[in-house]
Image (cartoon, rainbow, N blue to C red; front, side, top):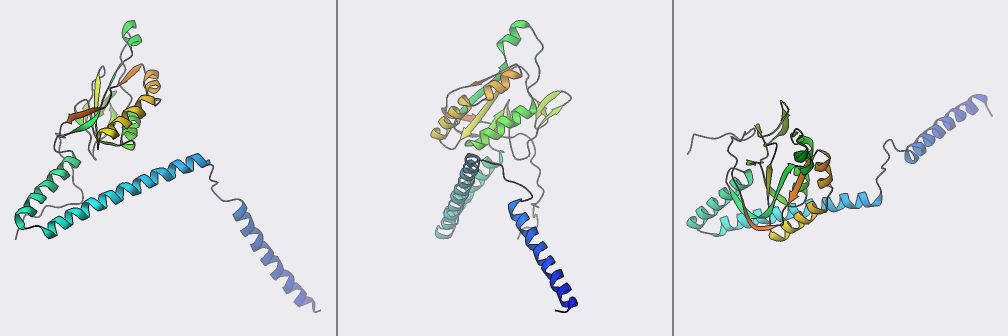
Length: 239
């Protein structure tokens, strides 16, 4: 056989073998290895299913509103419009809302008070964690120390003080109000928070987290600030 042909076959075989080796190595050793166990994956799947269910429920609600607009007369449509606007204002936080929920409080630990030690402000990071868990477990509306949480609310440290919506919260006694969709969900939220490790987390910061049992009706006041609007522009021209 001609040496030139043998050389060509050798080069082609080497390239093919190298490509196969690279592909095999990529399959066997992915760039980022998924180290989650089966329970973590199941939990994530459960959360995604919950979000999917919430989206389907929201779509169903919007479809029913559209059907009402299409099928009712003008007077009924006006009433439906008022109801829709009120619901949107409640969701945005610019109107007070009442419903079933849970009231909790954060106070200095008794040992701290007995020893006469200086009271430290509540950590913004710890408060943010608590708020995220409340939203995760059926919390719809939240008020902290009289400050209604809305989509623009920020919990941060300013000059050594924990602030919400730019206002410093009390360092000695902070009340948190949470409203849920139903009393059953309020009870579930209470059970979760009561059994969680948040008691220990706050205690490490010399604070006591007190969680009261679910109530059938509590009130959260409206947001008293001005909501910023980035994408919507008011049309003043009219028709």
